[in-house]
Structure formats: structure tokens, C-alpha cells
Amino acid sequence: MFGELEDEKFQKKLNETLKNGGVIAFVTDTVWGVGCLPENEAGVDKIYSLKGRDRSKPLILMSNSAENLLPYVKNVSETAKSLMNKHFPGALTLIFEKSDKTPDTITSGKNTVGIRVPNNATYKKLCEIIDGNVLATTSANLSNHPSAKNYDEAVKFIGDSVDLVIKSYGNEAKGLESTVALAVDEIKVLRQGEVAVCETTN
Image (cartoon, rainbow, N blue to C red; front, top):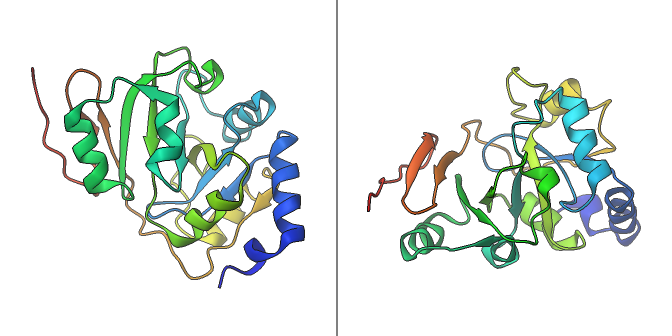
């Protein structure tokens, strides 16, 4: 069902690649992404370099479950918990205050970090076999260019720059990017995507 993702030799290769500062490309429920281990500074640097990404723009953390992401954030309000229960997994990125576990290298010096759980079976399987189950991610494209929406576009846009491109195995991206909402003190939508979220004020 998931091809090489179910092969022990490939799983070992994948984890060794990431541990050594590698960057991988993969499908999500929205668009294709690139990612590395959050604590691996070499991998983070490679993502910014291959995309030509401004270092003032942070990466986000993605996993196959919210439980894997909660240690990276703090001060999660009841409203935010309700949003997570409703839209995780799904096309919603929530930005929280970061905990001490979140490396400064992925947050561009900010005290916040975005987290998301994509609703894509291939991505979930990928995270299940990655050591730590969490990736620091951004979209699979050169900065200020369209995001890759399928395997062929991912290979075309950044295939020569990443260490591995993981096939989608029939679980394709929808092409519409996630909604991004700030969840510090109140809920404020920063980018409207597929998911509709009501803003709150104190």
C-alpha cells in the first residue's frame, strides 16, 4: 500500500538521511512539502538554501498526531484545543508560543511556532516511521514560486536539491494551502485557506 515506506531497508535509509542533515520532499493533504528533523541545524539550513527562503520566515512543525506536536508549544487555550480536536488532522496550521523544545533555528528568532497534522495517509505513514515522528517543514517550491501540487512538480521544482522525494502512493494533495491562524491570547486568521475558522477576541 505504501511501497518503499513499508520496507525496513528504506526506513533505515530514510532515518539515516534525516539524521545526517538530509531534506526530503513529500505529499500532504494540501500541497507538497519539504522537511527535515526539527533539531537538525544542517537540515534546516539546507531547506532555506535550496528554496532561496528568507531566514525571517519560520518553518512549521508537522506530524501524524497532535500528541507529537504539543511538547513543542505552550499555553494552549481551550478554544485552540477545540480547533485542534475539530481540524487535526486537516488543513489548519495553528501558531502557538513555542516551548523550550522548539529550536530557535526554525522559528526565525520568534517566540512562536506553527503546528499542523495533515490529513493524508501517506504523510501519516511517513511520520510513523521517522525517528521522533515530527518534521520541520515548508512548501516544496522555490520561494515566490507556485507550490508543487503533485509528484512530478515536486521533482521538477526541487527534486535535484533534496535527498529523497517520497511517492504519494495514490494519496494526492488537493492543491489548496492550509488556513493559518495565530492562537496566542486569541484566534486570529493570518491566511485563509481550506478551513474556515472563527476569530476570537478577549
